Length: 144
Image 1: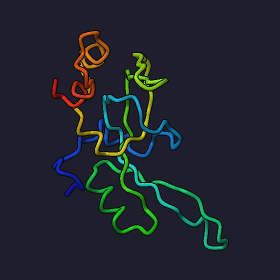
Image 2 (image 1 turned 45 degrees about the horizontal axis):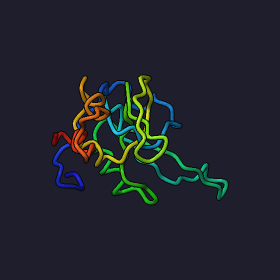
Image 3 (image 1 turned 90 degrees about the horizontal axis):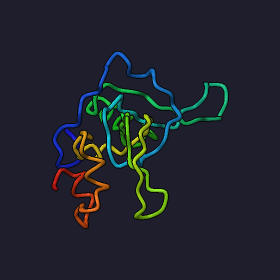
Image 4 (image 1 turned 30 degrees about the vertical axis):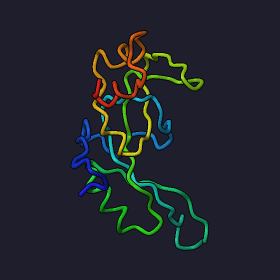
């Protein structure tokens, strides 16, 4: 079961690709998403049994439910995150100033942001339109 009122999170784009993406990606941002590539759980783990040194690691999963189960039973684990593919996104270099970026990037998102509908051809143009509603986020939430 998910940790919000949202009852299911999207499946990953390609289950065979889970675990093959780079660990270092962007974090958050962009407002829109195109695909979920994997669900990740970051945790603090010992490097080996001989030293007290530790490092942050993550485990990748093909479903939110599997990631959530791992997080619940793993000491030091954080909440699951979604590795999201953005083919295009909205950059906000300063508050309230938006620009349409037409290049792909990978970013980790809190899974709750997946409640927003996937980006479609009109999402970003409608968001940036001069006649957009005062609360532009309504467009991203599928409410406008």
